[in-house]
Length: 414
Image (cartoon, rainbow, N blue to C red; front, side):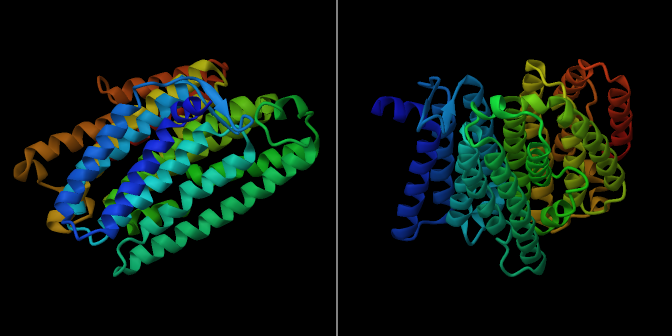
């Protein structure tokens, strides 16, 4: 039993071990940022490698915690993303006054995301979501001497508190209507009563806030602009990816009996999210705000894949998030380097980049081509799989609108 505990919870225990090492290093004699960053990168590499070893399927704590091959893959994708952030932004991190705190907060949030993915109970789900969200608000305010960073932290915590309140109210209604919080028990107790539907709408709304679906997206651009670029990258890629994974799990496992209801909601919100994200991205001058609205539009495409309510939907979302992590982190990595060395974050400042740095120019171009879904980049196949999964329901007008939005996005990416 004890061996099962250590093997099943290996991803979470590895993160906890790294956190303890960081605390010990912080309490000990002063260590330079350069050496500390090397130690952290080695630990994160070992953590990523361990994700491919000694994995097994099972559950613990009366099904409150569960894991399988798909969940392990999702956690490994997030581990890889965090490792990339630690390497891509090494110049910025070496000069950071709070390097230990940065990684402590980031890994605490990642730990919450891992528990979110493995949750088998709505109470466990809520506690994990709080653990994943609260450290991000502190990370957004990491530039303590900048007003925009303080505003970003404040907006993040207020929007998180509001969405968490909505979520908790929805969970309490689910418990009141079904008498259970267990993922396995709830589907058999759903009968479509008005109270249950209202509870589901509250839960769906909370997810909409976390994923920045329109019209629950208003906090996103301000937080992305005010937060340091590595934090913005973490928010845009790792946080969004984790919530997308969990969203699929909750809809497909817990609220499968309401599939006809949430398909309609998904279709409407997906169209709004793609359209508003694209139209607002057209008008942005700041690179971080531009990438913020770009990520909102990408969420709309993820919803197309989720709406299929099939195994194809799950696989298309996992593949797209995997590709999205590399594409978006490449774009944020270039933006971070330019911001670090020149202090410039406006899109107009990127004119003539090819003359001064051809390598960065090509990396940014390939990243944007992939985000736009231009063949033969991996992003093209990601969006193709999402649209193919969404088309399985036969709502071709919906897929047609998504395709038109891909064409709109081509303009601002190019």
